[in-house]
Image (cartoon, rainbow, N blue to C red; front, side, top):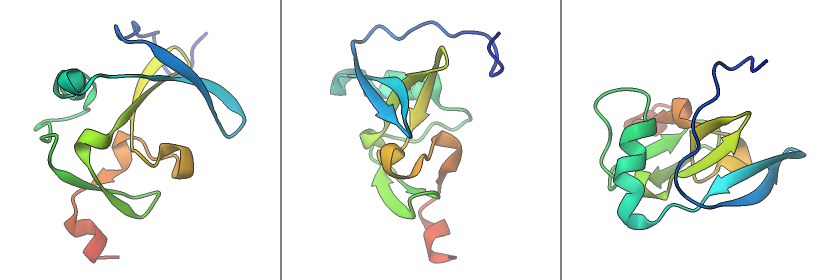
Length: 104
């Protein structure tokens, strides 16, 4: 039983095995030309940010450009994560507008 919900279909991209906090996962290798479509598919709300938009990773406490996102395969699901995911664990729900960093 998957406590996170139903299993999601895999994305049509190759993966590389990696590890975070001792857990083996996979990271998709997404070509630049496919990033906008993957972002649109996996982003949790509207509007979907542009690839050139800046976001603030709440967990890492760092800014990033959306195009630098990563996608992992964990628990039979696809996860849209920050480029700092392996450092701090931030997923798309932890992406905040850049001005949020000024308020901390």
